[in-house]
Image (cartoon, rainbow, N blue to C red):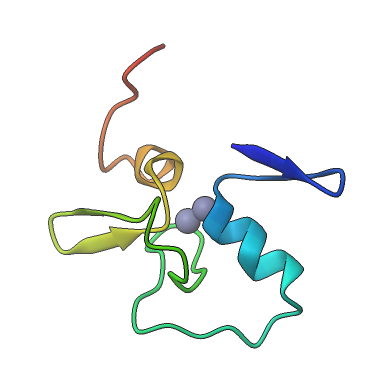
Length: 68
Ligand SMILES: [Zn+2]
Ligand SMILES: [Zn+2]
């Protein structure tokens, strides 16, 4: 999670989407929040689902948190 301009985002990818004024498209979208995957640094896949970050994968129940 990170904070940008007083807003909280689950990952740099989602911050990029929110602060770039929209119109960002990508071949893949997060299976949880639906944001296009524009920042590959946090992107991850679980089975055939793609998530923008580990947070979304956890939120979607695709994986379990490493710490409670
Ligand atoms: Zn995200
Ligand atoms: Zn997401």
